[in-house]
Image (cartoon, rainbow, N blue to C red; front, side, top):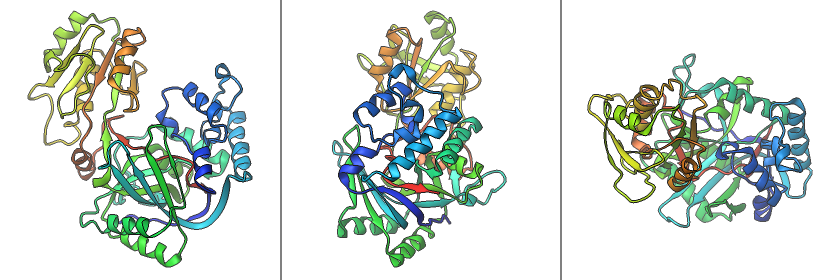
Length: 412
């Protein structure tokens, strides 16, 4: 059963105006550091000064080395500055109810419970009975980078997104009731127009009730933030900042790829694709984003193709092999292009904050040879992976809407 503990010392915005000034996208939502620099020009109080200190410079072409001791020291200094800013206040022993709504689609409403998860509950080969199940492998270098920042700032800034089954709906109902019956502490909107609302919970009896409610869940699944939770464990910390959401309220969007083909011609590519895929023209005019499992889009600079994996190319009873990202990695990137490692620099992973037209434009501009569009992983596929105690293929789930950083920060 997963546990949630209060944040002993939390740095939070004083009101909604402050939340708008401080909060930001997470570091892994940017395609480049330059994009974060651009936001800092419009939002100079943003927590990006702390989470991406390499971008806190006067000019876009003067970005720093994010791992340099001086850059990490800058992050620590910027956090201390934020602590002393009238836009923030420090609270003790809090949980929070966190709601995200999408105005363009009223059916999308996530509501969850925020606090501190326990690192000793993360399931690993050394801890096979852990109740918090990771869905993705962890790259040590990436986790180390998050750990360096946490050590330099003595703060946990990025929330880990955890999903719980909530089969009887009690968890959702309790959080929904709290939101309806209490004034919001602060709210803000993100770059996509999604609304983020936070209700701070300080009453000890209410905190205990929510802890007991969450403890009824048999397990939780790490939906986003594997490296952030791994960084806390790497440092030997007992806790990591997190929000637990009922899985049925969560949405997974496509996670696509840009690829360098290594000199392979279009004719050679199409000939070799036919071994593992049925290949035909895409079903739309222009850029194509598939929406159904085992429909895969490929743009080769001339036209969009639809790829369908042939029978025998994957085992449908194996939850990991059933994911289209795994099929593409094995039968296109590895077998045809010779890219055996999903971390190869010839692969660029692009989240759903960039659409298929943007991908096509990148190929047309000559910056990449191919664009591959994948249908979103379904929530049932995601849960099935976790229940089989397997790992998702790298960069295969892009949960939306994203948790916004800077709304609650844990001071360690």
